[in-house]
Amino acid sequence: MTRFLAQRVAAFLATVVAVTLVVFVALNVLPGDPARTILGIAAEPAAVAALHERLGLDRPLAVRYLAWAGALFTGDFGESWTYRVPVAELLAPRFAVTLPLAAMAFSLTLVIGMGLGLLAAARRGRPADWVTMTLAQVGVAVPDFWLAMVLILVFAVNLHWFPAGGFAGWDAGAGPALLSLVLPAVALAAVQVAVLTRITRAAALEVLTEEFVRATRAKGLSGIRTVVRHVLGNTLVPVTAVLGLQVSYLIGGAVVIENVFTLPGLGRLLFQSIANRDLATVGAIVVVLSGLVVAVNFCIAVVQRTIDPRLARES
Image (tube, rainbow, N blue to C red):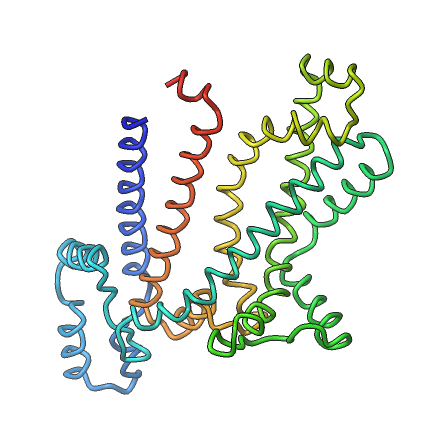
């Protein structure tokens, strides 16, 4: 296990370094002059040159990358060119919105997706199976931003059950704050619930063909009880493999959903920073979100090895 963890940590660090390199290269090959964008097209050449020096744009690319990446790993994300404050001060309050949103969407995906998948497997060929798979097929095809607008129209505008947008803030209490995240979380999780439902059903049906499951059914154990007692644990390995990809989608999809619901999270800040060409903030957000995705996948790999002893024997 120690060797496995060491290998995973090394892979984690290598991936983060690769992400910083890709982000830096992508931001520095964009057309246009960041200094002139900040000062305006009518800026004096002397002012542009002075800002180049202040931002370090006059130094070689390799030197700039090492300085930028080294600062990132020490927690220094630089200064926002648009807001004139340290980027870390912009990220901290946004995390308080994006992380609860992603956690709520992930919880909905895990509970509803696995529950419906197991139900469909236990009722294979019956109306419950047909209805579940039909809903899953529709869920995969529906764009999350369109679903978000439908949810706003139905539950916010017509029924007045939830706010149509914005974030109440944690200072107003956990209840109002979480209420502001319900509709965004549902819109963000809908597609992933559909995907996980289909994958869970397929994994459960494969386990149901095993001899030990047939023996329990022959003893008179009902379909639901068989699924809960003997099938659920054996479907966790393929399901956890998919959860890593779904976490990536949930974090990336927050960029769109936060803009639809005007949530002051990392996704909305990223969108605004791209529009303002605030490359310092864009680079920091992309690296932080990528590191978060890599960290989650690292944890999922550890969980997979823990719940499946075969992986330990194979290694």
